[in-house]
Each structure stands twice: as C-alpha cells, then as structure tokens.
Image (cartoon, rainbow, N blue to C red; front, top):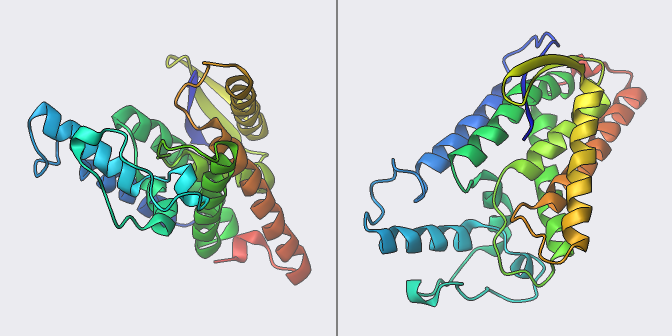
Length: 254
C-alpha cells in the first residue's frame, strides 16, 4: 500500500470490544500457523514446513471450486506433500478470513481494522458490527469465487471483511478526517470519504486490470476487496434504514 492509516479523529466513546477481539483472533491464528516461527510444533526442516504450510492453506482456505460446489475437494497442488481429506468446505468460508500468508499481510490488514473498525463499531453497535464483519467477509469470498469459478488456489486473508468495514464507514462516518502515512514517511490529514473512496477506486482498478490482462495475476484477490466493500456499503445503508424506521440514533444501538 502507498499509504497506511494512523488514526481517525472520531472520538470513540466505548471500548471497541469486537474490533479488538477480531484483531487478537487474527494475530493468534497467525502465530499458531505453520508460516510463523512461533509454531514450533510443525516440522522444522524446509520440506516438512513447506508441506505443512500448503496443507494448512488448502484445508482452511476458501477454494473457489469447492465453495461453489463444483468439486467436493480440490486435489493437493503439491502431490509430494500427500493428500488431504474431510475438509469442512462450509467452514473454510469463515476460517479463511483469519488466515494470512505472512507477517506483512497480517500487519497491513490489522492496521486498517484497528483504525476504522472501532469507529464503525461505535456507530452501529457491537452485535451489528460483528454481523457486518462476517457477512461482508462471506460476500467477499463468494464474490471472488464467482470471478474464478474453477479456481483451485485457496483465498486467505481478512481483506474482504475489512473492505466491508470500510464500505460501512463510508456510509456511517464519512465526515471524519483520517491521518494517513503516505509513502510510509509523509503524514497527511484527509477526509474519511476520500480515503475509503480512493481505496475502493484503486482496488476496482486493479481488479479490472488484472482480470482483463493475460498474465497480470498478482496473487491478490482484488475481487474480494471490491465485493466486500460493496457489501459493506449495502449493510451500512440497511443499518441507516433501520435507524430511520425506529427513530433510534446509531449511537444508542448496541
């Protein structure tokens, strides 16, 4: 990313329990995964650890062909590592949201969740925020799967769900100003709507570019980011509609 968010100027009035719990869960899952040095119970030799990582992602990641029911279980991409069986495909839609390919992938996602998650949670309430996160994450998985229906490569990462949080942010708290660290060294205060709007535009551009350009696949599920964001906007609008009908302020919802 060319810029990372540092903080949002919206004064959160309650401890964002759900956002912090999600961050903790993502970090703990990563520390327990075979690609982390802390997971000492996995094989230490290069081949053994490599196979453990491949098995881990194939079993817990969301594979498009499996998610859409085209195959019961995709064969292992590395036959030398053996084959897996009994994968809970339905559960992989959710478990994939908590997997990360590496520390940089994890940190980048958690920074966005740490900055924008508490704001959205404070605005719509804890329960609705938890539902928002999971629903938009599922939408991101299926959106990506539909763009690569026969795909055998597992999708992992919280980016789709976090994109959903950004989409909801655009609806419920776009008036805030966000401090961004541009090119990792230059701090700038920008309108919240501009930050999340440019994020979506950039992800959409990359999605269209990589989809229409042969050989341009970067290994990043930009489609998941796009569909997760759109789902977040929809959920955010639904929350506002509920508020209008009930006459309840968002700040009063738990």
